[in-house]
Image 1 (spheres, rainbow, N blue to C red):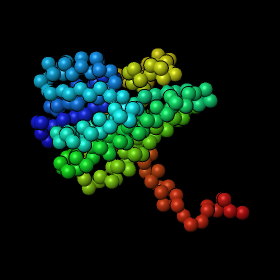
Image 2: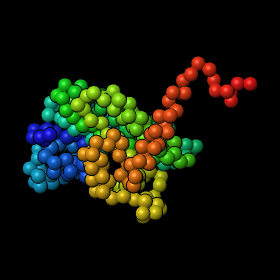
Image 3: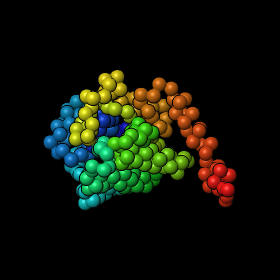
Image 4: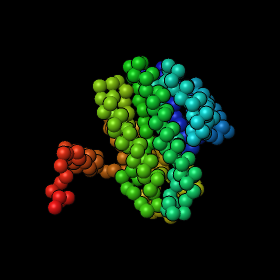
Length: 263
C-alpha cells in the first residue's frame, strides 16, 4: 500500500515506544501527527524527523487525561482524511499495593490507559472504514497476562486493552481495517519513573530495548499477527493459550449450574 499523503498518528510520542514508532513510520513514508504532553520534546522530535526524512510532521500538545484536550485529538482523528494509522501508545504505570494508594492517581491511570485509548479508537474508526484502509495498534502489556500483588489496576487496564482489541478484531473481521494488540514485557523507557518499581531492580535479561520492541511489533504487524508479544519465542504458545480459552466458551453461559455447585 502506498503511503503517499498518508498520515500516522502516534500518541505518547515524546519518549520511549512512541518516539521509536514515529521514527519507523516516517521511514516507511508516513507523514505524522505526534501527540504528547511535552511540547518541547515533541518539537525536537518533529524537527529531527522532518530534517532526516522530509516527511510532514504536526505536533499536538495534549494531556489525554483531560477531557477538553482529549476532545481536540478526537476531532482531528474524525476530520483528517489523510489519517491511515493510529498508534495508541500513550499510557502510564502505577505498581503499588492498593492499600497504600491514591485513588485519584489510579483514576488518572484508568483515564489514560483505558478511556483515552477507547475514545481515540472510536473517533478514528469511521474514517478508516469509509476510506477503505487503515491500521490501529493498541499497546497493551505482558502484564495483561500476568497479575502481581502490585499490579491490580495496571494489569486490569492492560487486560482491557487486549480484550477490547480482540473484540474489535472480530467486529472488523470483514473490514479493510487492521487492529493489532502489542504486549511488550519490560522495556527500557521512562514509563518506570514514578511507577513504584525501579527498572534497575529487574534482571537485565528481562528488559528489552525500545528499538527492538518496536521493530518486533512492526514485524508482527507486517506478518498479520493480531496479537504480538515481542519476546515470546514460539507463537504456538500464544496460539495454545488462545485455544484453551476458546474451549471454555461453550460452557460459560448455560441454563443450569455445574454439577459441583449443586447439592
